Image (cartoon, rainbow, N blue to C red):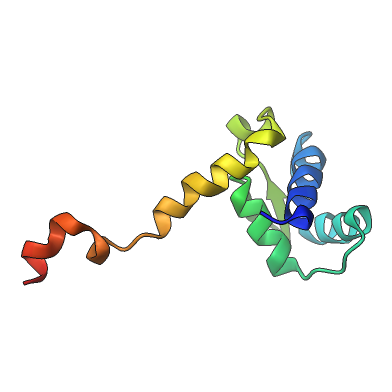
Amino acid sequence: MSQKNDEAAEFLHDFLRDGPKHSTECVSLGNSAIKTSYRIDWWRDILNHLGGSAFKKGNEWHWRLRPDNVEANTADIGERKEDSQVTHLSFADHPSLDAIKG
């Protein structure tokens, strides 16, 4: 993770610790906090790396952390990112499937 990613992850973790927040508020205050102007999709990627999620309330989107991630130490964020990369592997790339692929 880059320094800006780490700063953004720390900001979001702290900001969402007390409960869900409006997604545009997360982006606006986050950009101010880390002195950037990243778009919402970049911030959403940071949220996903934190194990957070988005949900719609009425016509507005809100972001939250999973309850088990609220108290997580932000030092673990890089480890969770590395662990999450396993989910991007394709079953077709798994060596034990060579016999099935033919």
